[in-house]
Amino acid sequence: MSVRVRFAPSPTGFLHIGSLRTALFTYLIAKSGGGKCILRIEDTDQEREVEGAVESLIEILRWVGIVFDEGPHVGGNYGPYTQTERVDIYDKYARILLEKDGAYRCFCTPERLKEMREEQRINKLPTRYDRRCRNLTDAEISERLESGEAFVIRQKMPLDGDVVVYDGIQGEIRFDASHLDDHVLVKSNGIPTYQFANVVDDHLMEITHVTRADEWIPSFPKNVLLYRAFGWDMPEFVHYPVILNKGGGKLSKRHGDVMVEEFRDKGYLPDALVNFCVLLGWHPKDDNEILSFHELERNFDMKSIGASAAIFDTDKLDYFNGYYIRHMLPNDLLSVCLPYLINADLIKAVNDDGFEIVKSGKVVGRNYLEGVVALEQERIKKISDVVGAVDFFFVDELEYAPELLIWKKMTAGEARTNLDNLLKILDAVPVDSWNAAVLEEVIGNHIKSAGLNVGSVLWPFRVSLTGRKASPGAFEVASVLGKEETLRRMGKAIKQV
Ligand code: GLU
Image 1 (tube, protein in one colour):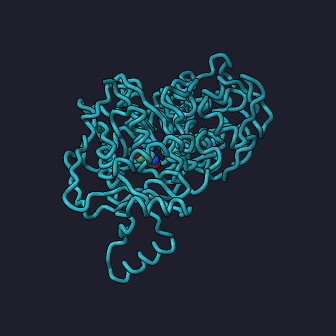
Image 2 (tube, rainbow, N blue to C red; image 1 turned 45 degrees about the vertical axis):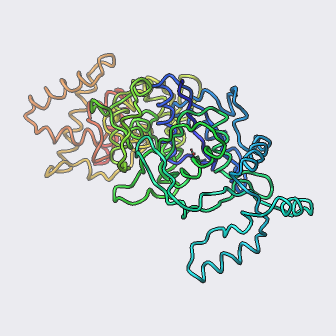
């Protein structure tokens, strides 16, 4: 039987990093096993619809690289794929379940349930439905239905014994039936709860493996009992290990710390997020931790998902992001950097290849910008870092304290003289041989023949171009700035120091 798995989120408006891990494992189980991955929207339990939530969910998953074979956006033979569009189906199966005695109608009013819970609390008993309606006679039920009393449908849980279930990762798990509540499967408005809709859909959509995070283990016995009550074949269940923070606690619920959209906006690359997330609970057999999406699609194996908690270490995410940034082609790197440079108002797009430097009005091409961002390729951890790292390229007037031009114990006069002499030497370098290697050679020769200290020349030179204590090297910066701008910035510095 070929693998059919589903990712079944409730659309909340953003994607939690833990849900991304679930989606990713699930997708990779399908891909590596030649199966199908289905997107199912579980929206029956939602208080209110979050506008655009499904679209943005699909969009962020697509950004990561996850493509579904079936789902609300692509269709398929098992639709509809949004639960609120399947209410008639659940209604039909709720009736079947009642007939099979796996559930019963409960007519208790919300007020009665409130009182019941209150009493249980006072008596320090677990707050659970007291099963008052579990054994109503057929005649009683008909009468109450006829008189129009509202009811919910509750699952009929075993009263004693153990419910034994089997998880693909954790193995056998036992639940004491006496702790299980006759919980609600269908609400009084006819809308099913997650517990019911989820199982009916997994069955009807012929899901072979129910794959989800281990926070769903409490639902596991309820699900299994439903399959048994219906007399349906059981899919395999696979609960992915919990994700903890570095301190061993639960992952933050603060959106900014865990939202995939936020990671994207900060400039984490999809490849890095995928590589990082896939290692949250899974480990490749050969220990090679750098894995491309395509390799994962081929080589992911469910059997290597571990049972122990995965640790969410953002330093590791930064490491992966840095790695993937360093391995980008210049053109691709520029493409992901451009929105940040534009948003920071450093440049404006004027046409396909032309960008206006906002401060100077000068128009530069992609080539120039590729050179700028390439200078930081080795250093930046997130794409958003590029703005702060290269903004000195995009100013008309650098602002820095003139003392910054002075290296160690040299005097202002020496700094001025060294810059002045260097400017004359650089003025003689022809524009068409203006590049980092030539500059390094010319300046190196000059330092040697004049018997100068390297720092006393290169420090003021670099500061005159960048206005910063730390930046990429002077030769590279000068090479990207070009001869004219280099000499102009040096000239300004000479006047200031
Ligand atoms: N709707 C559940 C969620 O939001 C799905 C759990 C499951 O996969 O069974 O995660």
